[in-house]
Image (cartoon, rainbow, N blue to C red; front, top):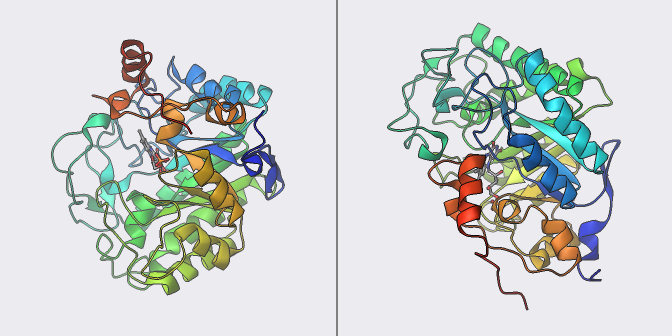
Length: 377
Ligand SMILES: Cc1cc2nc3c(=O)[nH]c(=O)nc-3n(C[C@H](O)[C@H](O)[C@H](O)COP(=O)(O)O)c2cc1C
């Protein structure tokens, strides 16, 4: 085993939960579930490979939380029924048998829903058409529809959906849940002033725009109890707006991160295009700000491919755990490969083309078996 990058392999804790090393798989939607939201046939092997490849923590793709407005795309897995929960049990068992931990990411797509058999319309904070176009690799096409502005009852039902889904995730054997508060989906639509023009207590001031985070975290915590890990993900950028910067700058970030600790989160997961880039002009990175203002363990994500960079982020105390997205798709054994000083493969978008599902990835890898070993000095 290489003696380099030892800090990637130190164990740690999130709350009371032991995590065997500092390397996590970032949540990635793979549109490979059954049409009814149960786990599909290729998903077990896919998730287990990350655990056997040495990742200490796996965060699942975003799972929809209710049978109302939450589903985002076709073949997305759900956590909205007992049959959804049952279908995850073999995966959580196998991951545990391999020594890793696994969190379910709970996601409500809101106005960015591209497919939802439960509703013939979309819903969001305000009736404003989302920027951008639907994502073809999740089977979407054309502009997003104008969502219906949610009533306070719709909001309560969405919050209740997160709480029920968290309970189901507990039954399914997950070690925790991560609430998706990032990337332009429902919670982020409330946080973002240009998608939230509400005049009630869920719109206007930053405190009001954060109210849905508070209600969701509190409802989830009440349902799962103190011993179960609950985290929350934040980003500035969105899948449909890759330039967005939080309007209130560092002082807003300070409030966001302080408040989510008060609301009962055990950890924060930040994602930025470049993990260490200043979040705002002249400031620290988003993960550093999250650490500074929340005092919670922070998982940081964004653009990491090489172990040097991951190790440096930990060394400089910018984060406690690093999550890897695309490079983990190319190297499901990234931690073992680094430990053994093996060459890493380069991610190629062909793996997600034309769709981000596991079948397309499998065909791509069969057609390009040797592709993509990156140079390593
Ligand atoms: C195919 C794909 C699907 C994704 N799905 C999700 C998701 O379900 N939830 C989420 O929070 N982020 C999702 N992301 C974003 C990743 O978690 C991660 O933030 C992004 O890929 C940047 O990290 P990287 O540079 O390590 O790839 C997805 C990314 C990809 C490539």
